[in-house]
View 1 (cartoon, each protein chain N blue to C red):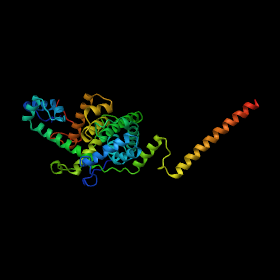
View 2: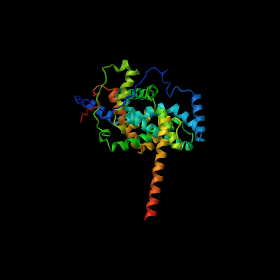
View 3: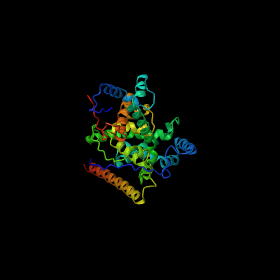
View 4: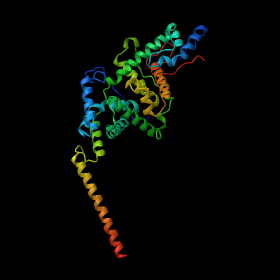
Length: 127
Length: 220
């Protein structure tokens, strides 16, 4: 916990040392303090404020996702197309042009392979 | 930072986004029925789950990655993983919690891969810039503006601290689940959580004597 370097009262410095010692306990979310920490907090306004702030912050964080206004245009479509691909099906969601291009590409690749095999046979026969 | 970072917009009108806490019990039941059908291999049921949950999943991914394109990649990959393993979903947790765990794991993997190429992203001592307007925190408590500040402070956390605090405090995952999905020990997860909470508290709710930019002053 940060400490104001201008504080030179030994009693107050000791108290702030204790604040630093119990800092992790104050940030924990179970709300249970050790007896030492509880005794310190009972007499330390700073740590009481710290606990109140942590509680307030966690309450606000719980509500953060409920208030999200995220822009997700196109994301659902993208996920569903990826799922179609994982299923091994040609997605009905893919536009017709893309589907035609895919089919054309596959056909062209098959043609190239057939030509290569034929060429290989011709070379072997000639040899 | 070269890549553009998308920022979450926080709305205060709850009718626009009913949110997790306000969803009815019947919708939870409907969700459970969909999960059962999807687990039986019914693709339409899984598609419906995607429709119902992708916004929340994207919100989480965006918080964890801090980048819209990365978040979209993460969400797509997470649903593919969920689709492949939906048959093993035991139903002892809510589907959304199970999905959050997958998103967290996928984000962690994604960020690890990305860090090999972009070293500036994971430096723990990232300079925190305070862009907050001058406000009275007492007056502005619980308002959308304070939420925006908190959200901005979360974004400014280093990714490994951000992941833990987002999963625990925003999406309510258990310490065990967080440790599992991030590949760290439970005690490491708790240490990171406390560090993250302290930074956020110092940033958003500074006590007297603290520097709200996040720089702490130590007496000795």
